Image (tube, rainbow, N blue to C red; front, side, top):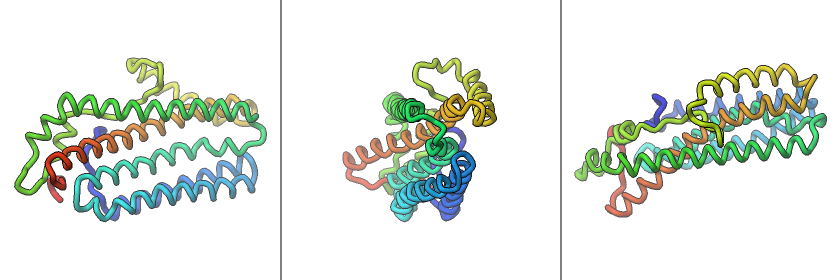
Length: 247
């Protein structure tokens, strides 16, 4: 992917990549939980993450076979693949919720902030894609659609829309993105190193940047799912099953 929501074909390589990332997420998260809160917490997190990982991977498998045939399932497949990366980023800080040294109030505040950031990124991904679809995408689709075989060069449609994920924090102007990106990295490093001296501060300094990064991948998934809505509407309107050029 070149930074925009261009098409990637479902393949065995992508399946194996997803397995590897989900496995790394589960093992690394368990090791972090074990280091922060002890061996029992590590195992508890391991089984929790394993269940989530299986659900994410199962969603991909459901779409995999048909993703090699039609455009709609390709987009679903890529949307679910985005969840793999979301879970990887969340696994970097979720283990702190197993720490007894962090109060329930601090955990509740961090959870609330995370939900707000992630929800805002979903909305941002949907809004960005749909705005460009209305302005550019729908017309470009008509130009690239080939009725003879119900195919479309979907990559070209998406490139014309020129929508890409970015750092998005509710209330923070997009013009601040370069500065915010640097601050996120600084806070992650500081938070990691102060986990023993200032555990509550560490949770926020490490957790918020991790959530923001997870939000970027959620934008990707949200945009792919927004594309499926547009494609499905076209299929129903024209009574066709669309496939991408090259399939």
